[in-house]
Length: 548
Image 1 (tube, rainbow, N blue to C red):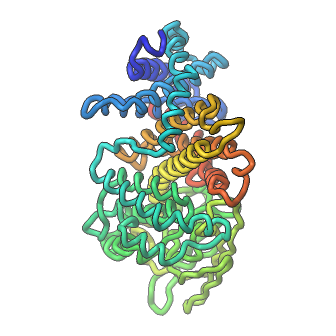
Image 2 (image 1 turned 90 degrees about the vertical axis):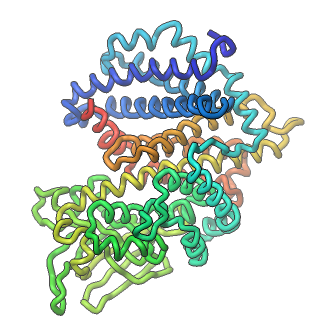
Image 3 (image 1 turned 120 degrees about the vertical axis):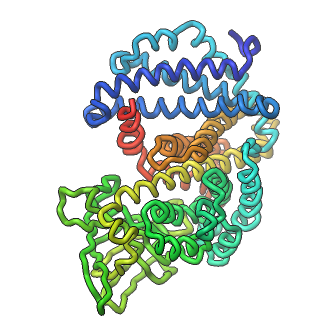
């Protein structure tokens, strides 16, 4: 089998089918060994391997399906076809290599035969043929890497146009200054952002949103993140998390009160979940709320601390997950979500007192990237919050863990899109640079190795993008698609930004060049909304094994 003997998409589909059978068998074996995922901590390394391979194969499936759909309702896109076969071959090769290294751990039996067959080996070689990858890279370099993927959805396409225009005209001109001077997002940019309706994309029209759904929201996030991760692409992440919690578990009065304000950008939101000594183990949070009454008003007193509370200085409210059941055995069943009101503050440190006698203060944590919002460690001392600000009120008491995790699912979906945006910006910057930079007598974009590097970027970004779009179309807060999208896209953003930086040579290490910003911004993506190892084990791996 050569690159010309078999159609690219046919080859890609064959590879995906073989790889999926192997992964399905590995998941079934893993489910048996871990007793439905309950014993993953005794098999952490293997669980991580299976989770990541399953994610790669799922991304390959979505990319191949996209290429196939284009042929059905429009016409074949040669770039999509080539990206599909290249990434399918990469995923199948990863599965084959992993199984070969630890066959007993995978225990896939007959599925290994098809994976190791002469036809599969030939298809992998055809897909990863260097000339094929270079051809894809050359096309991208000539087009300056611009993303023109068919969105298959009119609302999403219109959203992309509006968001791309906003990103280029309003965000890009100030993004570098915000990063280098570690500034807050300007209020006038937030006002313009709100005027575009970006805050209300997934909020129903009856509550003041645009009700466009998750795919337009993801597309918008991707475009804004390409201009600036911190100053644009992440502006609506925190409101989306709170909005999802309210729509899922809030009272009707709370929905009427808060959702229109969130949709209009009238209320800016921070999230308070992580604590100085508690990161991913959210069920063991220690910040507590105790019943209280002030001047006849029923409420709660909050005490404790939160860490990495992004935008909590500038925000008008903090959506805070705290312990309402003091019994440590209650774990996640003893947590509630509160909408904690506060005044906006603009400095690296802030302090607020309230007439009820409580106080909160925040200190920004210096970070190399993801600038524009500041992330704070927050100290909370006897801070009073009225009972009507407990999401769900009486019905929401001790239900906060589930509500917050549902919100985090939206955050993970958005993070997949944010990562695609950073990766896309890195690709475009690399293509522009290699077209302009000449060494040894010609533009460095003409060299084979440059074309190959760019081709790899294009295929991987395409896979991450289609996985993220599929997760948006089929969004389920308990589903596995959003965590998978977050897992893969964040790694693609890190790898793409660093490869693009290397293509810039020494200039890529200068803070004057945006590529240096993309690199440090990308580094945070595998950390927030579920740090990569925990996401692989406790979310993707556990769900895979539990469902098998």
